[in-house]
Length: 451
Image 1 (cartoon, rainbow, N blue to C red):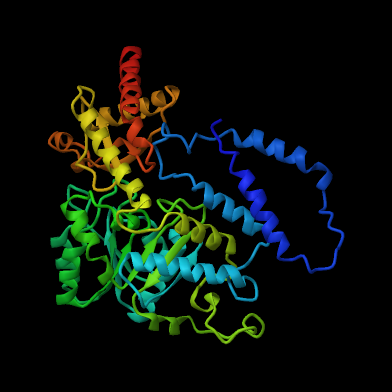
Image 2: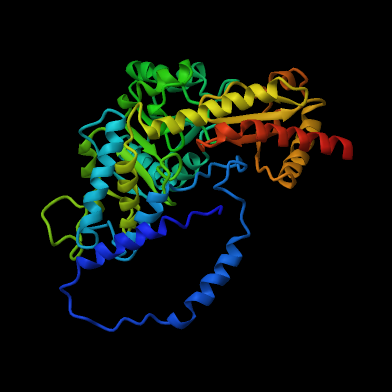
């Protein structure tokens, strides 16, 4: 049985308890439209959903797709029987409280006790809020991010009519400090985005060094930790990543995506501001939404309006089951993913088929097949990507600067190369590294014989 069904028994018990809370209501006839054909439609949907990669299985190591924890699925489903809206207390009394508690636990993970923050639809929306606040605090000043930062920063800056510029990265995929220092020294930079785990390679910008520059030049620092934020709990990071995460509590704002390593359903993002006073920027008046309480509503500190209270319920339940703290079971899962990717790198580096890029900082590894020019290597990467899928192993391809692969950079003739990319974010990947490496080599050899 690939998909969990046993936990549905727990959901049934929880649903009985929830239903008992409304037992004083008078009976009413509830017959949803189309109920006679619900089974037919759901079975048809199940058939269509089979057209997917097995994202939940360790043999899927392509994109940043980590299955929700069973308790998150169950909690989300349970809350959906009420379908609360966390825009205002009137729409989500219980889940608004759960959101506050869960977000406070995330903030505490970064050492913050006083802060302003909330959940949102995902990292894109969370970064939009962070850059919106940045623009409000420093109007007319520029936003800087590494050329390996997520493209959302450039796009969002355009939406917000903020001037955005890219900063060069080094051969390890991190923001180049010399380039940043020269650019920021002009005095027109309002905010620098430090990426705490790039989506291509998992590289961590040298935040500890960026903060030293802030002391001299006075810009704000926003940590885009949408992918890597939870690694603040990991004890097996390399020198740069460990030093950078040790200082993350000193930034002005943080974005993290619980729907990645936090094992939550989509979409669940979180934005945090170190200074609670930025809440004044959200001030607005509504004649009908906020009338049942004098407290500050989540909708009054968010650019989004309607938001699923079920997301807060799922996050709260997951963090109650697996507290987000160093040395705990949750942190151990992150450490196992990192151990898996380091083991995978050693496995393919020691062979005659692949050249990995630099040593990964989190749990992402990029690598290329050996032999030939960057153009020839790119073609081989795409062919092997297709062949591995036929072998039941699902990776990804990425277009990266050729300088990330030193042996290719020396050949010249191209600025980028198509590489293979693996994301080992499931704890189970550690036990599957050898099998993944075998299938990968077998796919490469099969393609070589066919060619």
